[in-house]
Structures are given as structure tokens and as C-alpha cells.
Image 1 (cartoon, rainbow, N blue to C red):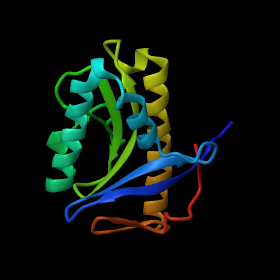
Image 2 (cartoon, one colour; image 1 turned 90 degrees about the vertical axis):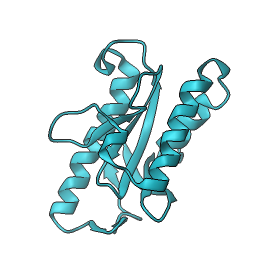
Image 3 (cartoon, rainbow, N blue to C red; image 1 turned 135 degrees about the vertical axis):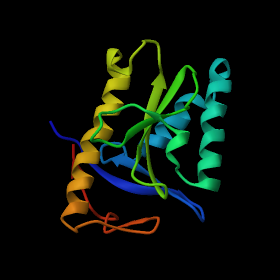
Length: 159
């Protein structure tokens, strides 16, 4: 069964816009779900703070490629934070230096995220969304104007 989702603007700076996907079933962005999962866990606080620090740098300098760990296939935009080792992974879609879509993540207990059902699910959701968004951009339905994705406010995607 396909899930209905849309894109929400999370935060914007002079250099970058941060978006997150939101599933219609719970009306919470994936990034909000990630934050609420880890903000109270003292044992993982250092890893959580690394991710928040990386996001603060991204807001200041842009979503530059060097800030991310490539995670997907060559043809998709899937990446993760933090770039250095840690127990927590936050999956993202890096559309450009100016546009980043934040997903969800979890504790990485396996050598590869593909070996963990929960992490794989978060990654696949973003990869499916990435394909649909790329198609809309190619067809001119969604456009990129500097750091803004236009015509996504009311657009529903089914992944």
C-alpha cells in the first residue's frame, strides 16, 4: 500500500532551505519524529549533538557535499549525517547546495544500513520520494528557484 506524503519547509537561512517529508497518516515530519526519538536519550546525546551541530553548519554554509556521508545509489540523492562515525544516522536527500530534505533515522547497529529493517525503510522512503520529485522537476511541475522548491506546498506524493 502506498503512503501519502508531502514536503514541508522546516527551516531556512540565507544559504539553504531545509525540508522534510510528512506522511498524511500522522501529520508529523520525518525529521520531527527523528528529533523526538533522540532528544531525551542521554546515552546517545553525543551522537545526537553531532547531527544537530552538522545541521547548524549546513544552515550557515549550505548543504555542501562534503558534510554528508553518501548512502544511496549513484543515481539518487540519498546521504546521511554525521559524516564521521557515530551510532545514529539521519538520512537526507541532498538536492543541491541550497536545498536539503531531512528524513528520519535511527541507531545503526549493523555494518550496512541495508541490514537493518528500520534504517532500510527510512532510506527507501526517501529514495522513492527522490524519484517522484526528480520526475516533477524534469516535467516542470516543481521548479527550483535558488533555495526554494516551488509548487510543492500542496503536492501529494504516493510512495
